[in-house]
Length: 348
Image 1 (cartoon, rainbow, N blue to C red):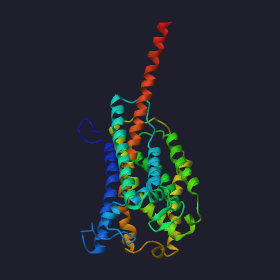
Image 2 (cartoon, helix red, strand yellow):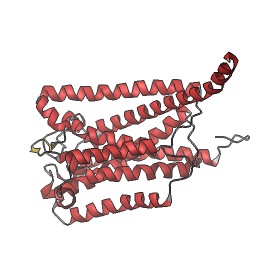
Image 3 (cartoon, rainbow, N blue to C red):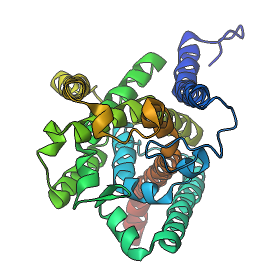
């Protein structure tokens, strides 16, 4: 946004800075993680070097790790739904350009997401068999050699709840910094996101290990560290940029209630504090996979989630595309109302 004199408006400058931060911070985190691994292994040529925490996989195999990606799919969908729920609802007034762009974005992004998931399914099935694929999808494995019903979801329960709370705060803060007008979040989208989280929790159950076992607690703390500094920021940045490209007009409304904000903030602060306290109270290195040391447990973990970053972006873009198309359809219905009424009157 520029003034008549050509100077960038402060609100426009803040918007650009917020958007830049959403992409710059994850990029810096990944670069720092790569540098840590390079120092740990004494080489920059890490592609063929074993870096994974299990001591089995090279950097290439860590990035292209289809079995792990399949285990993450229910969690990835929860993350995408939480970000979409935090984005303000789409106004009924939408231009034809918004509708066209929405259809293009929905088709291309969701198509790419389906291709990525399908490729992972085929590659993993050829390598490990369909029974192993089913076990990954139904959350029975977190490590290749550790099988327990619902265990993967148990390793992600509190960290996923944290992401849900953090997504709402992140989008609200980004909009506040950008100087955006207060808008109404989609209650339907929020219900779908938390409904998915609750459904998975009911299906896979809740174990006491989630809260007390150092192995489970430490894993969830690492998930927050990884996704809080990468996935969340990337998804929010993509959502803000896509909304601008789609020319989405948000439904005006009041800001979220103070009580809801307090609950979100408490969850964002208390969950990692609790996980950190329990993890530090035990021997995390002994309980976790530490074959490649701390660098393998922390730095390599960022690259293990590379397909998840891509899927999150695709799902958020696809969801916004569908929302824009729905807004345009609502507009056509409203615009057609007076015309239909006049036509009916003439027929009488």
